[in-house]
Length: 224
Image 1 (tube, rainbow, N blue to C red):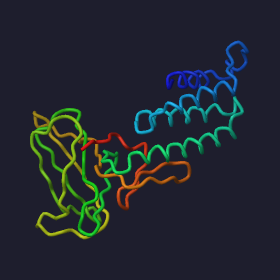
Image 2 (image 1 turned 90 degrees about the vertical axis):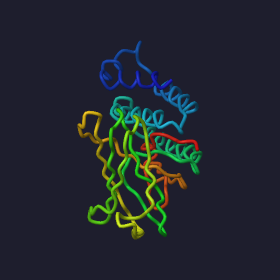
Image 3 (image 1 turned 90 degrees about the horizontal axis):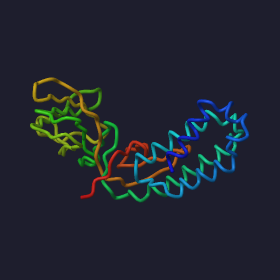
Image 4 (image 1 turned 180 degrees about the horizontal axis):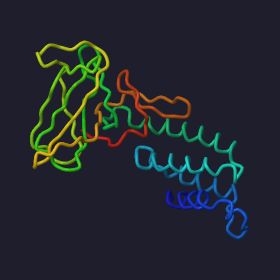
């Protein structure tokens, strides 16, 4: 179904005027919306792939809205989709997820989400640097012989001296080396339990403590 929508939108964005001028190939607004709502009915909003694909389709749709006179309809549709995503995203509350980003948060001495990363190839060693205010390194964590895939690192909330860090916002940097010793930077992720979902300006956010991440940044749900 997603391919049907994408095909129509790509045709319109690449040759919309020509297509609209030909009655035999013209798709009506009602037909298009019927197809789109059918897709929404079967959309898996827990799948970040499906969600990103839908957002891409809406972006393309916005580019051709004038040729189809759909501006008001798109605005209402965007609101409806955002509301649908909001309620669908509530299904992942309480689940642990990998999310694109590098923000970390410590509250009452407890680390609410952990540094994580994704490797396309195995790494001989990985170094994670936890950064505090001003970008100062407060903790270094070293890993050896790490397989390809997604991984998270349990940080105990302490600095290199073994003392608990202050509550607040932190971030991290990561560098890895392959079997030949060549340095590369894995994709940074964060890992934690989703405890809230919010809707702001037609965008859905998932929350971990005081941190909010765009729903589309969720790349994987981990069952534990």
